[in-house]
Structure formats: C-alpha cells, structure tokens
Amino acid sequence: MSRRVVRQSKFRHVFGQAAKADQAYEDIRVSKVTWDSAFCAVNPKFLAIIVEAGGGGAFIVLPLAKTGRVDKNYPLVTGHTGPVLDIDWCPHNDNVIASASDDTTVMVWQIPDYTPVRNITEPVITLEGHSKRVGILSWHPTARNVLLSAGGDNVIIIWNVGTGEVLLSLDDIHPDVIHSVCWNSNGSLLATTCKDKTLRIIDPRKSQVVANNFEEPVALQEMDTSNGVLLPFYDPDSSIVYLCGKGDSSIRYFEITDEPPFVHYLNTFSSKEPQRGMGFMPKRGLDVSKCEIARFYKLHERKCEPIVMTVPRKSDLFQDDLYPDTPGPEPALEADEWLSGQDAEPVLISLKEGYVPPKHRELRITKRNILDVRPPAGPRRSQSASEAPLSQHTLETLLEEIKALRERVQAQEERITALENMLCELVDGTD
Image (tube, rainbow, N blue to C red; front, side, top):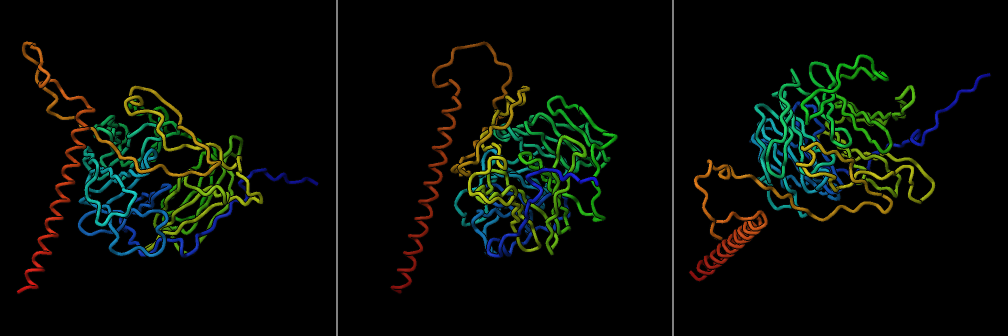
C-alpha cells in the first residue's frame, strides 16, 4: 500500500476569527461608489474608511482603540470636490495619509494624534497632474515621501510629496485603463494590470516595460464563479496570499513556495455577510503575543469588523519562526537618491518586544517658488548681506514663527469674541 505524504507547513492550520461585537466599528456610512479599490486603509495607529458624503468626497479616520458606535457628527477628512476613490497610509509616517479622487487630484493629509473637533479640510499638499479621475495610490516601500498615483487618463505619476514635484510620468505605456499597480519589495520595479488584459513589469526610472505577456502561468488556481473583484493581500514574511472578493463573504488563503506546485491552498474563512471592502494591517501592527499573523478590517454596509488570523501555539514565548524581522517605519532612501538610481531594501525591525508606534511626526513640505526661476543675470555685482538669499533653515524658521504668530492672533481673536459675548450678556442682564 502507498502512503500519502502530507506536506509540512507551519501555516496549515491558520485559524480565522471575527472580532467580538464590541470590537467592531459601528454606524459608519461606507461609500457606495462603484470602484475597485479596498475603500479601507489601516496602520498601527488609525483606521481610515471612505464614506458617503454630500457635496464632494470624504473619508473618516478613527484611532484603532475607538471601537463601538461612531457618533454621526464625528469629524471627517474633507476637501475633495468629487468622490474619494482610494486612500493609502504612508509606510514611513503613521500620521500621514494620501487620498485620490474623482476630481483628478491627490491630497496628502496630516492626521493628529488627538481627535479633532471639526472636519479636517486643509491638506498638507494637493498634487495636480492627472487629467481624469485618480483611482490608485501606492507609497514607495523604501524611499521617503515618494507616492505613486494612477488615473483614468492611463497615466502613472510618481511624486515627491516633500516638494510637490512630479518625479516621473509614465504616460505612453498603458493603452487602456490601469486596474492595479504594485511596487516590488525595494521599489525598483512596478507590476501593473490593465484593461488590455496584460500584466506588465515596469522599470519606472527607465520608463520601460521589462516583462509582460506571460504566456504560461507557473500555477493556475481555479476559483468559484463569483464575478466580484478579488482584492489580493500578500504577506512576504509568511509567503501567504489572501484573496478577498468584493461582494463575496469569504477570504481564501494560499501558501506560495519555490517548488511545484508553487501554490498550496490552506483554508477559507467564511462569514454570512458580503464585504464592501477590506483593510490589511501591516505586520508591525499585529499582536505577537497571540500568534496573530494577519488582521483584516472587513467593511459592511454600516460597520467595519476586524478579522484575526492566528496560528495556534501552546507556548507563550515569542515565536521566532512566525515573526522574522519585518519592514519598520524608517525609510531607507531619500526621494532624490531613489530617482538617481539607488535601491535599498526596507529597514527591518524585530517584533520580539512588540511594536510601539512612534510619536506624531510632522510632514514637512518644501515647495519650490516659481519666482526663483529668474531670467539670466546682467553684469555681476557684489551682494550686500541684506541682499543675500535666505538659507533653507532660516526660511523654515521664519515660516514657523509666522505660523505661531497667526495661531496667537487667532487665539486672541477668539478670546476677544468670548469677552464681547460676556459683556453683551452682562448688559442684557442689567437692562
């Protein structure tokens, strides 16, 4: 008799479980826009969800700990004049998020650690360069302040958010609508899918397609007959890919290996209600004490429900085999270094002691002044000290002082208004 050999894998028994009711986020009007993005983005500090909003587009940002019913007047992030189609947290600053909209713009926002008292309406910077709706966003995995956007104009733009400048524009590669874009681990290449049913591997700095039209797949996995869009999430630390179908009620997951048959089905997490979208927590945001290897944030029509994937272990010790060093929040390169041709792998951190998000870090924007582009100079003459150009440090110091003065003036105006109101009440009381 022949014996069947069972494949050895520590992920054969990944266990999925929905969070308890009090750990969900209730009464959120999830967007009903017809678009193929995840509608949800999450990091170790915040949960962001695209929501229904009148007179433009908006999304809500909640601290992870703020579970339960969300007040209907909870402040939103607004500013777009059309529906928000995609959002993405910066991997190097947990307080910075980018949003893409039907209004053809990309906006980058600074989210405070405290709960704002009113809507956040002023982005740190607005990026304008697309001629049609912008539906795809993706931050560079290793370079600081580098953001990719793709629009209905079939163009990919790579921005330096720190200056608001276009680093690269890939406008002659895709003949039709771009469906998805993904960086490789060090950000040297892009993978894109397009309506022309072609997968392209692109070197963005050379504006060249280095591979496409793969004739034979390494592995072919038959799914069900659902026609919903599949949202894939890949965890390189465990080599597991999770497939979440929009409009579906299940999450299928597979392990990827280097040997045939390459793709190994693990299991399916099923629930009763279909998902409108899905967020995927970065590895540094997981609870390693509970052997948690993935956490999803499933969007329903009116709520968001965490779903936890764990590998059951009897020991309470840190499980080294489940948690290799993983990308942390520090960038490996600056934007100009990457543009010049440098590549660097992500800066890794250990999760042995758990991960504590860093304190609020402000995104600094340095816009180049078009007035600095001067006509050719006439005969040279010596510059006096008063005419010498300001250094970048001096300029930033002056801007910070101006900002502080404005805040002080605004506070005094509010105090004057309050005192005037008190005076009016006293006068009315004596009449």
